[in-house]
Image (cartoon, rainbow, N blue to C red):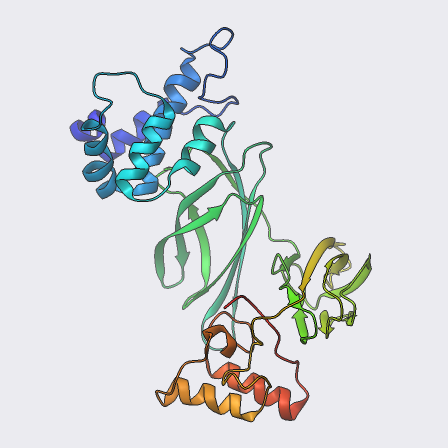
Length: 364
């Protein structure tokens, strides 16, 4: 902080680079008899990065105006403290549990090794669909962190922050007005990490299938990105929900009415259309079928059945100021996560055009 106050933010970043430790081990001293409590790499260098990263996570306003004053004025003045004491003060001051941060960076081992790949393609409506696959390739601890990104597009740079939820693999889907031509990952280095970019190979999208309910129609369409479309789907084995079937080849649809509540495990293979790459993957999947459904997506008017009245109800809600579906998710017929005119079209296609049936997409 002195370097920053005296010479500016660039000097601050440069100083931290001199303290950058990318080896293994935890900052936490597990055994006072055998561990080196004065380990320069961990006790000093990595620990300084932990405080730097805390500043990055909470933001300058919270760090300087909330966290530091609360710590300075705490009951621990002029006394010995532990990580748990500091974590408690930070959490109380911010009004949210920050133990996850200290658990991974003080008690956890190592740092994240990020690997990302992306694809930007026209969506047919003048915008661009953007898909980014982000992996943490290190062994051991996986890290939940906000990650600052600069998306370089043909229309200019866009700065934003994404949350990586400590998953080994996480997929991000965004829409941009212009094509994304490059990504600057964590440009100001707020995270102790390594990062590399790779080519987006054929990747199953989404990473999980929706769960369903016994006695209610189920529909899930498998999709993929990367490689060369169209994609080919084959069932490799396991158990689909009783009452459901899989339509493979280039269709990739699981549909039917589950007749027995249980957890079902199976494997699907996806392969792209480029014979030269042999880009194929087996994907282990799970669908949980519950015995009781709280509502059926598409039953917007709460009548207990799907009819053209539900489409009218949705249209009246969107354009006429009519009442909202109760629960709101009951109007999300296409399971997009939002209510739009597309849900009314989805219902009309189901009722009159033989389209897929609405299903229970999420809890109310």
